[in-house]
Structure formats: C-alpha cells, structure tokens
Image (tube, rainbow, N blue to C red; front, side, top):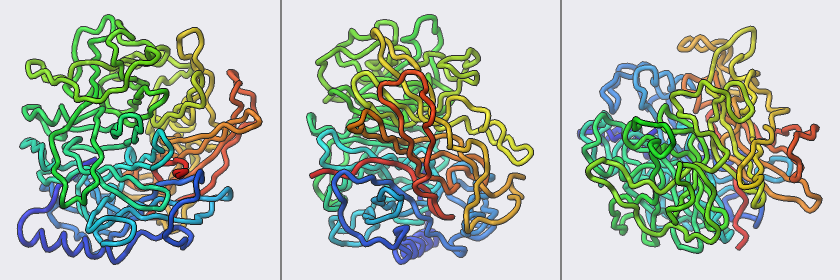
Length: 541
C-alpha cells in the first residue's frame, strides 16, 4: 500500500541517510549473477530485496502517520510496526532475475535507484514497497518487445511511500500526507530501463501495467484513496483501470498530468443490486492483460465490488446486464473515460466476463466456481488460446493455525491456478491446479528467527496460501507450462514480507477435467529479506 515522506529538516536528513544506505546496499542478485540484458524468451521474475538496517528505525520514533514505532529496522522484526501503523512499509530495490530451467539466476537487471548508469537515464529511480504483496507484477508487451513493472519514484528505504498521495492528487484526509509519484518501469531486452511517472493511484498502489503496441499506451491496474473523503476528483479518477502515455524523458524532465481512467464498473450494473458500493472501490483491480485487442482486469481483494474477471467494452453493447463477452474486432480504449461530477463515478464501460463470479464481495455466502469456500482472490491471468484461460488465485489469507498447519489455507479448493474454458459463449470453470503447492504447511527459510513470533503468536516460518502472478507457454506436444509466484500466510507479522517461492506446473491444454499427475515444482525459494512478485518471459527483440 502507498505511504508518505517524513516532514521537517530532521526528517529530511533521516530520509537522505536512509536513501544513501539503500544505494550502498544495492539489491543483491540471488546467485551473484552479472548485471546484463536478457536471453530472449527466458523466464524472468521480479524480486524485492530489503536493504533496511537496524538503525533505520528506533522504537519510539514517530512514523509518517503519527504512530510510534515499536521495532527497529531489523528484518523481520521491523514488520511488527504494522501492528501500530497499518500503512507501514519500506521501499526496496527491484531486481528482474532471469532463471534457467533449474531455477538458477543467470542474469539480473536492477531497476534504477537514483544512480546514473547504463541501464537508466540520469538519476531516475523506481522502487517497490516492501511488503505490499499485491504489487510487482511483470507483463510482456503485446509485441514481445518490453517488460513492464510498477513501483514508486522514491529512494530505497523511504517509509510509507505506498499509502501517500501522488503530487498532483492531494487528499487532505489521507493520514499519510507525503507525495510520491507512482511509476511504470519499462525494460527492453538489453536491460535498459525507462520510467514513466503518473499521478494515478493516489493513496494506494499501482500493481501492474502492460504496454500495448497497437495503441502505444500502457494499461495499468491498481487502487487509490487512503483517506475518508472523496472530495478530490483525482482520488477516484485515478483508481482502477488507467491508461498512461509512455514518457521518454528522464523523470526530472517529465510533465505529469492528471490520471486518465480508461474504464469504470459499478455493482449497479448487475441485476437486482440496488445500492452502490463505496465510491471508487468497485474497481480495486489487481492485474491486467491484453488478448486479441481486448483489455482484461481481475479483482481479488477488498470488501466492495465483485472479485472476478472483467473486460473493457468499448462498444457499449457487449453486456447489458453487467456480464458478457467481448465483441469481436471492438477497438481498444485510447481515451480517458468521462468522470461524472454529480455521482463521483467514472462512467461504466466495463463488465464481468460471462461465467465468472458475479456475487458481491461482501455477500459471498453461496458457493460458486466449484469450491465450497467461494473466496476467489484473483491475481494475474494468462490466455493459452482464445478458449482457454488460466487465472491465479492467491488464497483467502486465513492464518488460523493448529497442530502444525495453517488449517484455513490447507482447506482451500480454489487457491492455486484455476483453468477456465469458453463453451458456447460462456466461460466455464474446469479445475484448479494445487497438487504440490503444500497449501498451509509451513516451510523453512534460512535467516528467519526460530520459534514463534511474539507479535502474532504464530510460527515465523511461512506457508503457501495460493498463487498470485502467473505466465505460461504452450508447448509443441500440447502441454502447457505455467509459472507463478506464491502468496503466503503466517510467519512475519506482515504476510507480504514472508519469503515466498517461484513455482512451475505442467497441464494438458485440451483437458477440461483434471487429468492428474500435475505437480508443482519449486524453481526458486526466496531467502529471508527477499520476496518474488511477478513472472514473465524476456523480451524477444
């Protein structure tokens, strides 16, 4: 989530010191791999590495929200501060690691951290928020020429960047009053980074972006509004589905305009729904994809809206009752969607992909989609072809622990990678790939403390809760290779800071009932202080 900048001369000095520490402690490539470009088509994962130090914070120090810190900057105790400050976070360097088939890091490209160098322009900077688990997705552009990842235009070790305002959209009710641009980082096959700043997602986090070669635009997903009011139009206008024009100037030379939403959705589009949800929260999107010129989004968190799969309908005719399928040949969105000053909403032009869940997030009592718990925490999606869609489910976040197992996580039937097929105009749930994930079963991580975390009463060792971001490829023999990063429960006080895993599993493209034998294999396990966030294939040109 987003956060602010400490104020006052004393604060400015502290932040400068932290930034310098972050630059000196550059993100370490996991296998001491050289900084270089990518091998076309190779698997790439995004990774954050915590570079904070014990002296970065002291118990009793006032945090940006006014809360008082209860722990110093040591990993993993630093995250105990979330018990007094729900907005607590620390920015960390982003590394894009190329893995071989055995999971070994063979190359690594670091996002700019403020130092001039061959991979970035001038003093550009782009960091991620440790421990915002919904961030850091990687997407390969529609023409295969570049990867994109979202972050913050803030030095490493900046506190609470992810709940702060953006400079052009200031919400006076936001308890985190600092201003930090969100940034879309673009990297080519040579490992060169370009960062485009945006005022979107003020008060919260940008999560994913993809470059569409046909329109020359970025399509982005995220959330906004960390305050109580909605009087500043940009807090709503800057949420959900956004389009951003790529910048080629350095960050210092960019002129950053107001957010430009490409679409909106309201639960009032659904039959029988009489009451609108909290303004701007219907579109708390977590992932974005483009397939056949259509822009798709998923929602899998928050208590408003519908946790499901959406698409942008530029024709106005695809889904009169809030759900449908795209009209073939419909143009992609290229202009900002109208903001309705009377209602405070973005004019709806998005709808649920027909067959996916339509139950409101706040009333998911009736089982859907083939699982008893009906908690679809959708993450990234990947189209294997026009009629086969894989969707990541990050799990329910239930950290109930008993007899050595996180029982809530272990009991899930939808967490993992779900497979859906288009049948007679309706998307149909086939099955969920789970075998080998070890849902709810703690695993050891070197460098984490032993025993139980006194702040939570739970063991320090984490467990897999589901899969958040995925990519895949269709093989010549009709099989599908899927790659993803896991979500976690337990362990560290803030679950998003738990070291997680990069996993892979093989499926049969044509299967609509689970054929059996598919078992996840762990490609890479994060060390203490590292988290993996996204997966994609390297640019091919």
